[in-house]
Image (cartoon, rainbow, N blue to C red; front, side):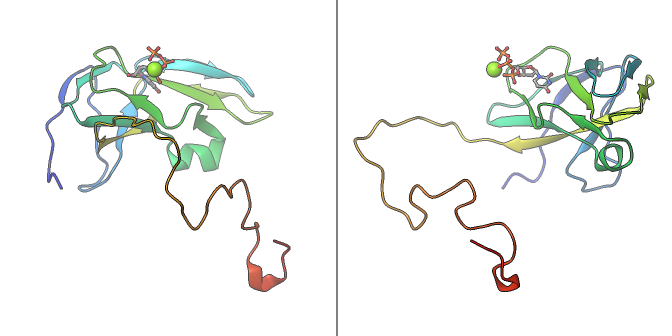
Length: 152
Ligand SMILES: O=c1ccn([C@H]2C[C@H](O)[C@@H](COP(=O)(O)OP(=O)(O)OP(=O)(O)O)O2)c(=O)[nH]1
Ligand SMILES: [Mg+2]
C-alpha cells in the first residue's frame, strides 16, 4: 500500500486535512451562493489537481453540514478522474424543506478523498462463477435484526 501520494495542485485555497491522518481534505467554496429549501447549486472550489494515474478523488459530504443543516453532495461520491484538469466543483443540495442555507467564500462545503483505483478490463464470458449470494439482492436478507422478530 502506498504510504503517501503527491497530488499536484493549483488552488485559491488548498484543501486541508483538519487532523493529521484524516481521510478527507476539506474543500472550500470559491463563490458564495444561497441555497433555498430543496435547491441545488454547482459550487466552485477554486481547486484544480493532477492526480497520478491509478488514483481518483471522491467528493463526499461533510457530516456536520448534513446533520445540522441538511446540506449534502447530490452526486456523492463525486468522482474526479485522474485526467481531469478543470476546477473541482461541488453539487450541493439543500435537503431542508423550510430553511435556506448561505454558503460564503471560504466555507468548508465538502471533503475530498484520494484513493487508488485499479485499471479495470471488462472480460466478456458466457457465464459467471457461482457465489453464495447468487442473484439475491435488494433487501433479500431483510431489514431489521433477525433476533427481534423482524420479517425477512
Ligand atoms: O462532484 C464532482 C464530480 C465530477 N467533477 C469533475 C471531475 C470529473 O473527472 C469530471 C467528470 O465527472 P463525471 O464523469 O462524474 O461527470 P459526467 O457527467 O459523466 O461528465 P463527463 O461526460 O465529462 O465525464 O467532472 C467535479 O468537479 N465534481
Ligand atoms: Mg463521466
